[in-house]
Structures are given as structure tokens and as C-alpha cells.
Length: 85
Image (cartoon, rainbow, N blue to C red; front, side, top):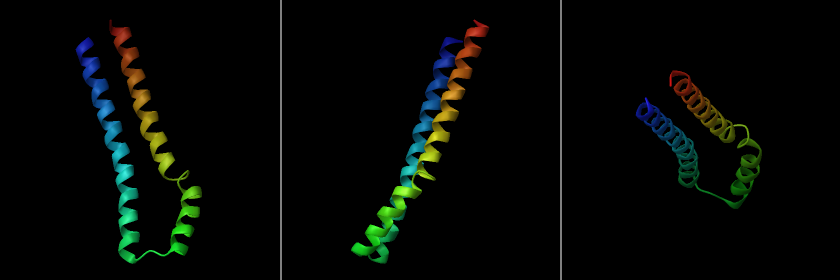
């Protein structure tokens, strides 16, 4: 059972990393789109101000959910392991 717990936790860790890179990839795609459309300093300033307020609502929220689920499942697996031991 010890090996199974370790494999499960490694799997959760990999899923959390994939989720993090997915959120990062979304931001990179936005930046590429802005570069293709042509970028002015006024647009950059407006996006910067928007990002400061909007990132807490979108990016941080996604990261909180990813890591909350991961930590909850890891703790659940650990307690199940202790119970079955």
C-alpha cells in the first residue's frame, strides 16, 4: 500500500503541474494575440491595469482550485492509507 500511496501522490503532483502550465499557456496565448493585433503603449497600459484587477478573479482562482483539490486528495489518500494500515 505504501508504494500505491506514493504513486498516487506523484500522479496528483503531475496533474497540478499540468493545470498550472495550462493556466500559464492561456496567458501566453493572450500575449501572442495582442502582439499580432499590434501593440501601442496605451493598449499596454490599459491591459496592465485590467490585469491587476482581473487576474485575481481568473488566474488566481484557477490556481487556488487546482491546489485545493490536489491537497485535499493528497490528505484524503494519506488518511485512507493510515486507516488501512
